[in-house]
Image 1 (cartoon, rainbow, N blue to C red):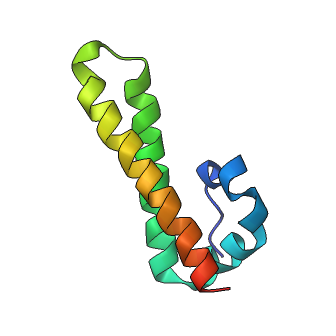
Image 2 (tube, rainbow, N blue to C red; image 1 turned 45 degrees about the horizontal axis):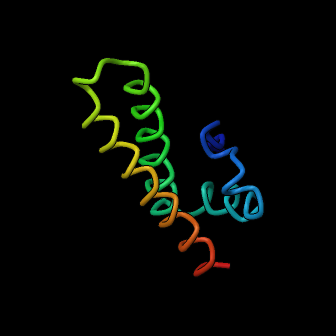
Image 3 (tube, one colour; image 1 turned 180 degrees about the horizontal axis):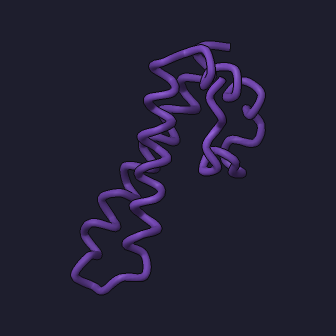
Length: 80
């Protein structure tokens, strides 16, 4: 059984956590979306405290994280 990544334990997903756990374990497409979100969130944190030179990279991953958050919530709502 796959463990839910720590990045998914956040306020944005709190109301859907039970559905997320089930989908993450049973639905490969949902797992891929969640894993991409987790990777993007980690990259955002990595570039957060770096120089201005990395600002574009940080913004890229921050925007991707937001898009993936929306995708995750949409997926949950569609598959409830």
